[in-house]
Length: 139
Image (cartoon, rainbow, N blue to C red; front, side, top):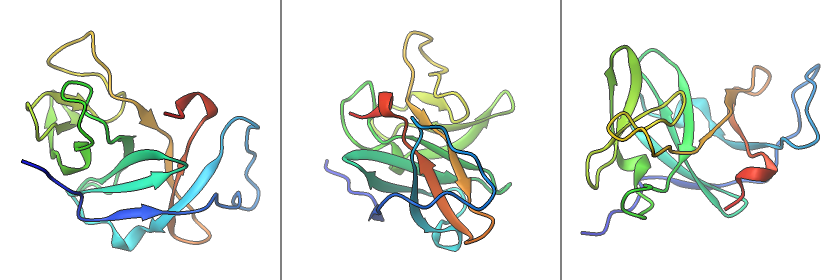
């Protein structure tokens, strides 16, 4: 079975919000308007060649992880099922159903495996979603 994300976005680096300090090694990238994200559904964005899975929870929290499932090697995490385990917001891979903590990327079924996570924010000036892609996270 081959799956494709509902939404794939490619954007250029975003200008830093007014009054914010940015570190030289962190680059914020403009992804999409916040209003285009659907609660409890994932979306995939291509950022400098890195597939990033974006999630918006019913509580309005944003999370960004790698779209690469470390168990199967398939880029499918944005198609995962959101939930909670022990109070942690989670995504279950659609391939083999391993569950990852969206805050840390830790696999809750195998402590030796971690899903990459990225800083994500809603720009208060533009209302757009931005993801930071540190240099060390380039794939």
